[in-house]
Amino acid sequence: MSVSVTSKLNRDANSFDSDKGTTFFVTLGEQNYDFKNKEKVWTNYDAGLFATGGQVELYKKTLVAGAIIEVSGDGLITRTDPEGKYPPKNEITNAKLGFFSSSDGAPSDGETP
Image 1 (spheres, rainbow, N blue to C red):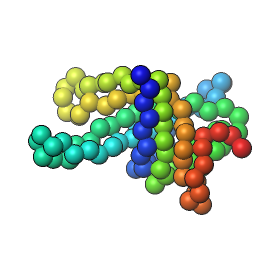
Image 2 (image 1 turned 180 degrees about the vertical axis):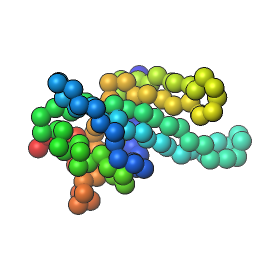
Image 3 (image 1 turned 30 degrees about the horizontal axis):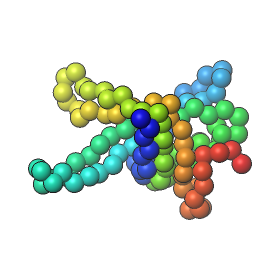
Image 4 (image 1 turned 135 degrees about the horizontal axis):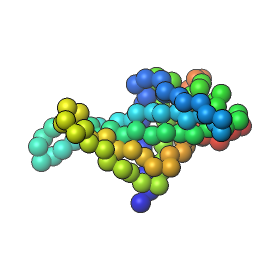
């Protein structure tokens, strides 16, 4: 199953550097309306986006609060809080950055120029 989520980032991505590249961690959310319960509900997603070379600087400039991004992946793994304090969160597996809004507002894709 493949998955694709488009969302506005509420905060800058966290990053982790390794000798092979940098992984950027983003949290995405989408709001839907539950007609059965007559309320708005949120579905939350986490994704780790791996970057090397020129992508690292591009991702540092792109994955900031307020940016609109599209992340796709191979599937989802649902994680639940064992204590029940937080709602379930879906991890996007093998995540890739697709569309994103640049700082000048022009749309682009995740490929290195």
